[in-house]
Amino acid sequence: MELLITLVEKGLRGHSPTREEALAVLATSDDDLLDVVAAAGKVRRKWFGRRVKLNYLVNLKSGLCPEDCSYCSQRLGSTADILTYSWLKPHEAAAVAEAGTKGGAKRVCLVASGRGPTDRDVERVASTIEAIKQSSPEVEICACLGLLSPQQAARLRDAGVHAYSHNLNTSEDQYGKICTTHGFADRVETVRRSREAGMSACSGLIAGMGESDADLVDVVFALRDLDVDSVPVNFLIPFPGTPLSRTWELTPQRCLRILAMVRFVCPDVEVRLAGGREIHLRGLQPLALHIVNSIFLGDYLTSEGQPGKADLEMIKDAGFVVEEPGSATLPEHRGGTAPTQPGEHRDAPATEPARTDLVTPRRRGAGTDLAPNA
Image (cartoon, rainbow, N blue to C red; front, top):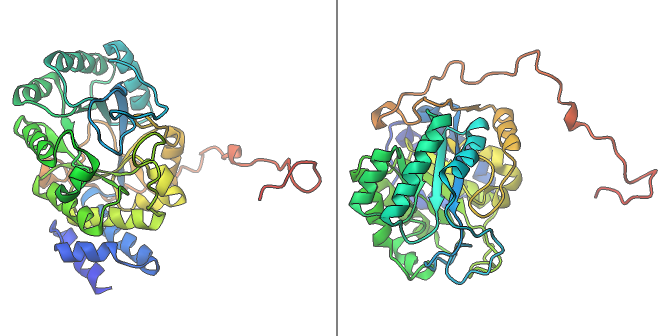
């Protein structure tokens, strides 16, 4: 396809497509899907090689949020069956974070529900960071605490926060349909404040909330214009007990097209496969690794994810390697280092033990009294 040739040429130069070209990616057919993935994969490998960055979420305070974001299981009025608790103590949060770093996570994301932190909350987070750094000194710390004042942003930076995460979630035109207690401009301002304070800006979107293709393209271009360093792409988790509980409009194929569009618009930025991937991509998750260069390991804030061991096996089986702690994620012109192509694809050593755990003798169906597996 001529479109894909153009997008690859632009992406390899670090340039974004036009809005019309981005819309055209979302409009491609399932017959062209593998070509779209392959084209996005060329751009991904140019800037990030075959590395996959692992991130781990720690939910510091769960539920009971005063905001009314329709997609969120922690929202005001939610009846979702989730864990609710107040702030974890620093040593408790550090123990959870250590489980992630031992699993290979390079970044720990500290998240707390609410409109935004009080100054006391910021100090709690500072103490938590100190506790985490004692056992994992090289780990990157990302904070996601809601709307910030300039003073709070500066304090978090001084406490050791490397990145601040605050998603735009959807387009400005669509925003009022999913939240009324704050606006799109509030989120944009928080992203800007995090950058001005010297933190890396992490901001992304949630797909599958009833938005149009134009809404998806608009929010991704807004993220590009904000010059964020990482873009988490979430797919709606329709929690029972939330207003969007019956909104199921994504297919694995559409999810891949959305990821490819984000990669083309943000060619040299960390694109992270985030919440909802197991639900909506299902068996096509390994294909997504050819587009994204970052994933969350294990569980999310209020929902369980794929086991961390399964994530690591998926990365290895797809021919990718886990990004090492202490290494730079972003390419040189964005403050990181260029990917080292030679040797990145490492075959399993000949002495690797056989995976006998994959073989399960049949105990049902023909010759038994149990129903067959069908």
